[in-house]
Image 1 (cartoon, rainbow over the protein chains, first blue to last red):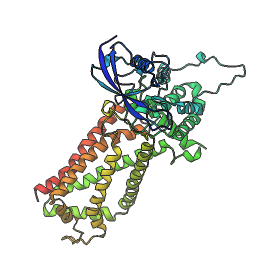
Image 2 (image 1 turned 120 degrees about the horizontal axis):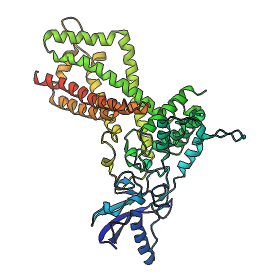
Image 3 (image 1 turned 90 degrees about the vertical axis):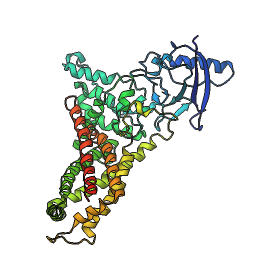
Image 4 (image 1 turned 180 degrees about the vertical axis):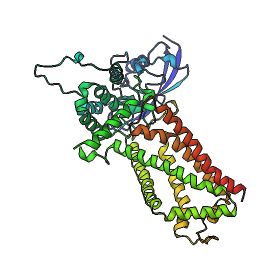
Length: 252
Length: 224
């Protein structure tokens, strides 16, 4: 085991209707090679041994590709460091004696389930509202690879598609806006020929759902782009702004 | 879906914010061009300024644009207010610790505060000049025009007003610093070739406009 001593200030909340509060936890013997989640595992192990309720937090793949882990660490989504999720954050980013705030994503649309775990199904509903391509399965399907697509467009669509839907953009945004997520999900389809026929309907439907969920309004602070573990660009937000404007103006 | 069209949706509010904002930037240029005449404090300069003020308040085209301007100011303020309320509602529980400096500029996350300050200043500013020009008891100059120059000179001989004016130009600078380039992004005008230029022009405008505006009261105070 390591030799760092830290003080964690962790948000504890028994359930969606509990008021919640910050609780201090001293953690000793933290190794700088641990990931942030492993450090929490050690703390939870300790809590369970003492007969206390362990801290609830989301996690799954622990290799930065599933989008399940979250945590607002010391005032930043996924903690300090760029282009990483919380599971990829290592304790070497902190110093012995540090005090670390650990809070859940804060958003009306992401209600707390328990402690640090939030319900991010609002993202699923935005996706379901229009983030798809309708495929005719009548038997004369065209091979996707037979459709020529400029390399640059394919790359941009792929860049957008790397969004893992973790919600760091919403958590970071001072307005709690979900524009970076929605823009990425619109862009990954609208840049490709297969996504074009439904582009207008998609932009309208996904923005409408986004507004319904109670996310805030984008004010172009650019904070989401900085904190996004996948480096999704603000260019995608501009693309959504363009597509929505064109769709609103020309819709019948 | 039609209801969410050009007024209701979050994006529509941003389009209107951008369009009215850019129009107000254009207006600031015209306003500054007029104000710079105040630097000529000679008797002829004063007459010229009063004649210009008369033209700006009577020429029909200018009058028509001025109504569009009042509407834009009110709408920009109202829309901004609405956006700010919705944004607060989107995060009912604040973070205990938030490292805003790590990922965004100070101006970008304080647009509502900066805008409110500008609105308060606008009320004071318009009461002092615009209201006086339209409905105040102004003396006439040698050419028989309303003597707005004397009203301006009187205002800019008061230290507190000059200080307030200069400070508010600083506030305007920060508002423009984020606002100008943000308007383009809101309208979807983002392109790797042009966006860097737009951002640079935004910084240029945010520095040059307020500095020249602030120069006038300082100049008139010093040479009073």
